[in-house]
Length: 167
Image (cartoon, rainbow, N blue to C red):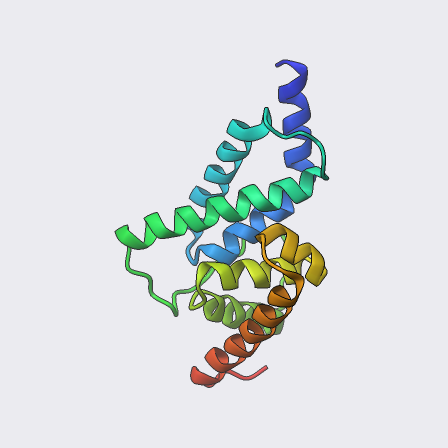
């Protein structure tokens, strides 16, 4: 392997949590998440030569991952019918907590009803990004990011209530 490949693999390994979270946010089944994860890594590798290091690698990775997920989701929805209440399996390795697991399951089921932009907003919010950072990553104004994020949070709450789930 050459130096560029080694550096790319190191950066992917350091930031793989982003890929796991994006995959979980956009795909509701285990195989779909794995396919999306691989597609994002492939797209990152294809574009790695164009990464100018004007921003942090993770910021660039967010953009590529979210754009790839949106395109992937459109393709997948044409080929599959999703069962919104299907049992989910988490890619991340965490200690098992049945209450937390149920809450995450309900949350991710609600997220599956969001459109691609709403999913991106929630993902970036959950990653702890500020309204300014969310706006930069999505190419919208900071005010627009704040308004859209608040509306998306309200929508998730409505979806959860629709299914009579309680936390």
